[in-house]
Image 1 (cartoon, one colour):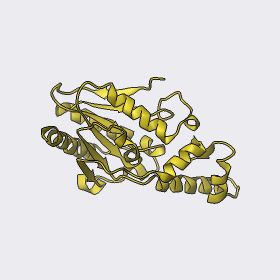
Image 2: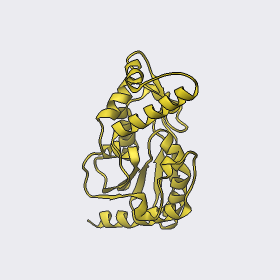
Image 3: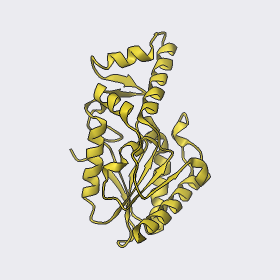
Length: 220
């Protein structure tokens, strides 16, 4: 099933930036800022595309039906359809799958994170929600229940295959790579906020940095 892909135009002689957002609820908190960043990239002459991963955002696929490898395959398929060189820009858990684009000119990462850290954070959220509802739960019991069926974590129903894939995943070594933290662009960790938000200044700074890095990678 084809997924929605948000696109902003740019110069035809410049690389396109394939954006890989954070995963799960972190993507919702970052989306407004990422769209602002894409608008700025377009104004700078750099095109960009932000595809929905299967089971995420507006996808009609059930999240419980996908694995981390499915996301890697989907990302590679999107890149294969482009007729221009690609720079991959990823945030947080997006760095776990961004190397699926094996022929990229380069990679740009913001605050990459290990998959096991994502799982632990979602399990902590589940335990806190259970406690507020008067239910007792623990990390071991939650993980054990995945063997019987999808587990609800932070509003997502995840399969054992997805959880196992995340637990084993770390950002791969890729070259050329530019890696930054929020403070490098004068921003903050929007993905940790309680509600979706936006930071126009951070969006402009990220766009400028990505635009510059894309030019450097294209000239290599």
